[in-house]
Length: 94
Image (tube, rainbow, N blue to C red; front, side, top):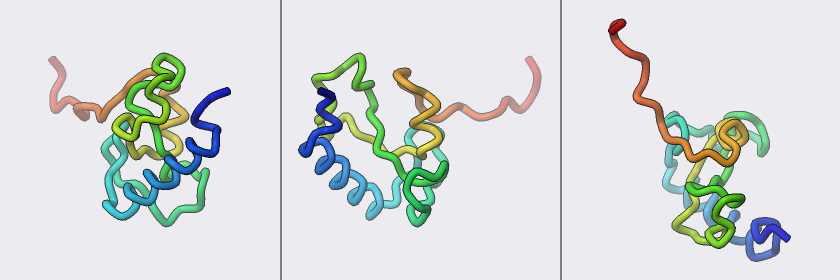
């Protein structure tokens, strides 16, 4: 069983979400603001993601230091690949 789907995992996710909501942290994946008032499971809403994937690092699934705030859409889009904010669009062609 995936530890993220256990009672302890759900409690940790709720605690992390509350801390991220209070700090109003931006999405760790894209760097944009998260709509903390959006209904759950909508694309711009908060989702608690993992810095290192649960699939490749199952021992870190319940490690608070491995959690980060992400948009629902960002968390779903990167799958097991670790991502971070991009450097942005280039200002000129090279």
